[in-house]
Image 1 (tube, rainbow, N blue to C red):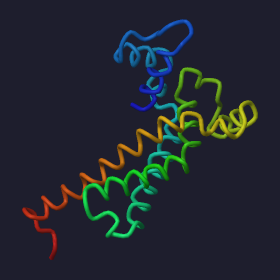
Image 2 (cartoon, rainbow, N blue to C red):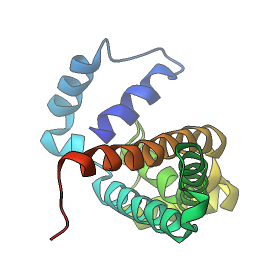
Image 3 (cartoon, rainbow, N blue to C red):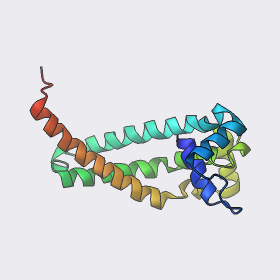
Image 4 (tube, rainbow, N blue to C red):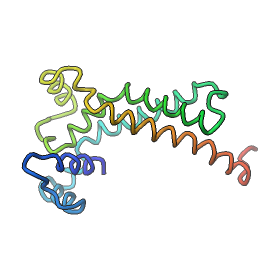
Length: 164
């Protein structure tokens, strides 16, 4: 699903104009040209990105003192901070993942080759391309998630006792 999303986004910005008419046309085209494995390109960087980012977000959130996250607003702000921290730490992994899943993914032989090409051809700052929009999205997303999580747990605790 992540590969399909990245390719459809890349497709919209092609100089020659979009190649895919719809989501289903995009999936059908990728599978017919590259087989089923075409939709799994960049799977390894995606797994690394998601697992490390989520672990970091929850880890940072839990390090923040409870009194700084004990209301929905405080939890949202703490969550936004945790999300922002994870973006700064793992933006490079996201750039590599997106490159390996994009329309020009075939020019990379492996994750290591992709990293090497970006570094040699664009420099180290290229690993932070798109950091602004991603930082905004992730801070909002994690802030909302953490504030809702706390409130949902409170409601569930009233009706579903989990303590022995």
